[in-house]
Each structure stands twice: as C-alpha cells, then as structure tokens.
Length: 161
Length: 159
Image (spheres, each protein chain N blue to C red):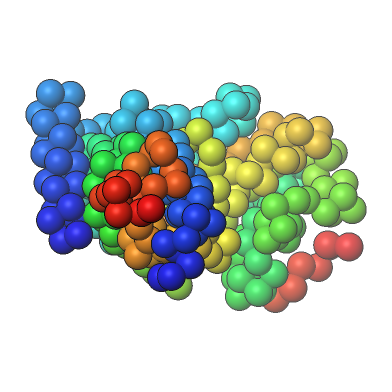
C-alpha cells in the first residue's frame, strides 16, 4: 500500500508541477489584486467596498448606518460607535434589527478580518436583498479600523431591539 | 475488517470510494480552472508563506484530481485514500487554526462555486471524509466493476 500511496503522490505532484509550468503560477500581485478589485458580492455588483477613510468621513452622518456582522460578544468588546449589532452566527438577519437600516441612505457592514471577510459580505447581501440602500462592505474590517486609531466604543448595542 | 471483506462490506467500501471521489473531483475542477481565486483562498488562511501560495494553488487541485480519479477507477484506490486522508487532515488543521485565530473566511473547499464559511461544520465534514478514507484504505482492493469480487480473487479458489 505504501508503494501505491507514493505512486499517487508522485503522479499528482508531477502533474501539478507540469501544469504550473505550462499554465503559470499565480503571483502575489495577481491573487491579491483579485481580492482588491472584485466586488464583495459577485452576484450583486451594486454592493461595493468602502475604504476606511471614506467610512470615517461618514461616521457622524445620521443617514449612514454601520452594521457589525460579528458575534454579540465580539461586538461588546469593541465596535464602531453607534454601529448596529447584527450577528451572522446563524447566517440570517433578524427582521426587527434589519428594519433599523431600511431607511438609511447608506449602510456599511463590517466584521473581524480584512480581505475576504465572509460575514460582512453575507450580511451586505442579505441587507441589500431586504431593501437597504447603497450597501457597502468596509474594506479591512474592524481590525484595520482599530489599527488606524479610528473611534470605537465597547458595550452592548443600545439601539438594537 | 471481516465485515469489509464481505459482500455488503465491499458495497460499503465502493460507495464510500465513489462519494469521496466525487467530493475530490468536484473540489478540484473549479480550482484547476481558476488557480488565482484558490490562491486567494489559501492566502486568507494566513498560514502559508507567500512563496508557496502560488505553487500550492496549482499543485493541490491537480493532486486532488488525481486522487479523485484513482478512487473513481479503483487504480491504486487504497493509496489514494491514504493521500486523501492526509490532505483532509491538513485542510482540517488549517480550518481549526483559522477558527482559533478568529479568522472569518470562506473555506475555498470547492473553489468559488460553493462558498462555505469555515466553521466546525466544515471541520466535521473533513473528519467524516477522513474516516471514510480510512475505511477505504483498510477495505479490500476493489475495481470499479465488478463490485462483488476483489481484484486479486481467483475464481478457481472461490468455489
């Protein structure tokens, strides 16, 4: 069986190497560019990214709502001021909480990691399908927000139902 | 082991083999067609050095495809099951470290055809597939057809 295993491994690795030589290997600039330029939700190109400094400029705008996709515990540890907690733990949005963002001019979702933050993208999709206007995903998420020393607060969500 | 050598056991082994083969082929094809997206998925785990991400994004899908084909056809199927279990354990380890570090990401298991967030469900799926691979590796060496007879069986001795 060891010989069989080695044969499968050798054939697989050789074919992979051969394919890499023929088709080329993606470079860091290529695969990171794909992350940077692609819309956050491929099926909904109207949902776009928003850069950290652009989001900061909208922080005091009462018609713009920040929505936190992380768990309630993470939210309470630290979040964008006045952000609404809408945990994506279950993969669905809470109807009463979603009603808070429907009237907003813009909605900005974020979660805990930069790059391919799945929760904020999923939340953006659900909110857009729910009728929210101008939904964006915060590029870099809360880690970059905090590392920029932008305003943050801790504690439970005050406006959430 | 005795059960796996029985007629029912052989059917179980073959069924598991086809399921794992299907999973590996379904996982490999989108990645082979779009290695840059798979490289992004690998990068998001933040555990692979930059120099290895590109080669892995091309090599791993081909290895998955070879493993899938071997399991499907029965050629070196038990060896392929061992390679598959090694890959599944490595993928599960990557997922667990991502969960432990609080990294929220798509698992990239099936390229971007099916987007699944990394979590204990995806880890559990890998564990189940790994156990299936163990059964295949411990089971009889069966060709795809006929399923009722081990490849090395001698009809003249079975009577």
